[in-house]
Image 1 (cartoon, rainbow over the protein chains, first blue to last red):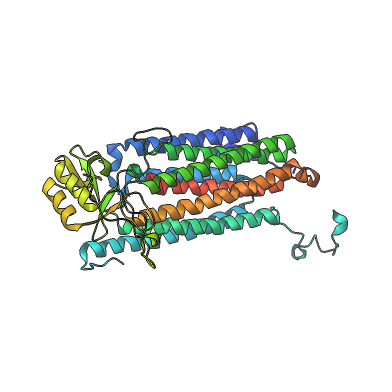
Image 2: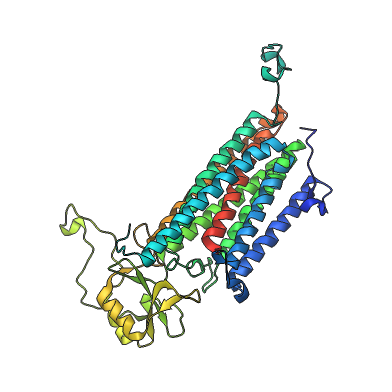
Length: 127
Length: 326
């Protein structure tokens, strides 16, 4: 394992670290900042972010995007995806991302449809 | 080690098995494929949660009002404790990467130390999760369930929540007791009875002029609808059939029972992953101490369990967002 090389830059080379240990702490700081922003937004819920946008509040979109940012850094730096070959990365990430997006799409669409049936249809029973 | 492997003379050729296009060991690759399948399981749960939530989008409980407790502190602190738990898990992920990194440098003492910290972090997280569950099950304010299965909660005129214990008028002549075998009721059973009966709550509501009923329906401002005084009395009188305190798989004082079901199922499944992660970490920790990997001359096993441990953290990031934030 002596030849184990790490790529030591994050944010497309904006921040470069001198050693792998340093990079780990750098990523921790980044994840902590993102979590802190999420919690602060979640507690104060700024009025400006409560407007609906593409079926959801802007605030919820921000939460989801920040979560994906966190997931990216956990996978790429903690799980060393950055150092794996391109093909392994694609086998894992593209498969999961495609299937999960599809699942979310069909289930949320169906959920919204069932809500509309309750709202406008004549269904009285809960199923 | 080469002596034990029978050489076939085809290792160099592409189809001879000597080729490693992904440049990863068998074990590591299988861990990645396991993680993909487990990620799909979790996304199935979370997507099902999304389905139910979209189905009841106008009456789903507001998570900020459900998870407001912090151990050893009284008062209303939404999200603080979950944020702490998230931080603990991220922190234990960091100590895990540090252990993997120390393993690459063959530093046994450092690997041992960081593995130890990772295990401690995992235990703190599982403990916090258990506390969260206990608080959720115990409940706080109590509510009335209607014939249709809706939950009616109580607020004062400022919209602040009021607990049943603060206004219910205790009836000293209550005769209803829990059906139990020792009372001669065989082949029948029921759970613990709530502290109050519906009529006690109704008497309390009539006596306290400033208590109002709050329904599950979310209004345009994103808050739960509060009924007028007359409507409050009417709803409890005509529709209230059961007092609900806390939550289980059947009833839930915070709102839709589905919310509690998903809470138990998703955080439970995740907590089980954390628990098994801790157990695996402990096994690897002892292997490090007795020098198994030192003799093997590589610490890849630490890296493999590390992958699993980070995955548990990764899932929590999503559970945190979809259960507590969105």
